[in-house]
Length: 315
Ligand SMILES: Cc1ncc(C[n+]2csc(CCOP(=O)(O)OP(=O)(O)O)c2C)c(N)n1
Image 1 (tube, rainbow, N blue to C red):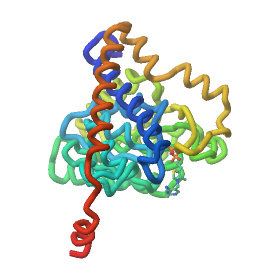
Image 2: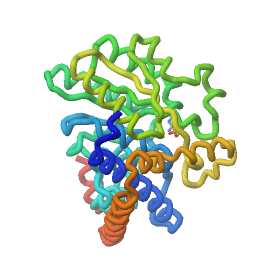
Image 3: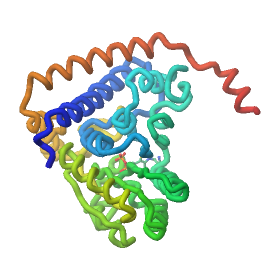
C-alpha cells in the first residue's frame, strides 16, 4: 500500500471531495430546475474513479458510463465546463448538447460517457486495438457496471480483448443494483470478477470504497498492461448512497446496507489514511471555492446556438 505518501493522499482526497461536492451541487441545481433529463449521482462510489484515474498516464484513454461525472472529473475534467455541459450551456465540453450522460473530452483522453448500458466496452476494445496497431504505449480503461455484465457486449468485447491480448482494463463498478434489481436477482454469480475468468482474463476484486486499495490495484494492472500481459478485469464492490437517479427515493435498498456502506464512506476512509484533518479541511475549502466559481461560470454562459448546430447537422 502507498499509505506513506502524504502528497498522493492529498491528491486523492482532493479528487474524492471534488466529485462529492460536484454531485451534491448537481442535485441542488437539478432541484432548482437548472438541469433537465436524468441525473445519476456517483455518491458513495467516488473511490473507484479517483483511485483508477490517479494511476493513469496522460496518454491513456478512459471510457465512461451513464453514471460518469466522477470518471470525467477524476480524469482531469474541469468543474466549470462539466457544470456548463450538464446545465446545457454552450461552454460545456460538448457545447451543451450532450448533457449529463454524454460528456467526452479528447484532450484528457476521455472517449466519452454513454447512456446505453454496456455500450462503452466495445468502444474501449476498439481504442485499445487502435493503440496496439499503432504501437503506442497507452492503455484503455473502461468503466462499466454490474448491469452491463449481463449484456452481450460485455462477453463479446472481453473475449476479443483476450484473444487480441489488448491493453484493456475493464473496471466493473458493482454497486449491487441495476436500477432497483439487486445483483442476486439478476445473476447467480454475485462476485462478478469470476465473469472474466471464463474468458481467460486475469480478474480480481478490490474494495471499491477504499481509494488507496483501488489506486494500488490499478497501478499494478496498468504496469502489467503496458508489459503486454493482456487485458485485466477489476471488480470494485461498492454501494450507492441513494437511489438509481436523482428522482428515485431508493426505498428498495435495505437501510442496514446503506448505513453499513455509509460507515465505510470513501471520504472517511481516505481521511483516516491521511491522518491530517487540517490539510483535508483546507482542501475542502479550496474545492468549495472552485465549485462556487463553476456555478457562476455555468450560470453566466450562453445557451447553445441551435441554428448553427442544425446547419452543421445538415452538412
Ligand atoms: C441497453 C440499455 N438497456 C436499458 C437501459 C436503461 N437503464 C439505464 S441505467 C440501467 C441500469 C443500470 O444499472 P447498472 O448497469 O448496474 O449501473 P448503475 O446504474 O448501477 O451504475 C438501465 C437498465 C439502458 N440505458 N441501456
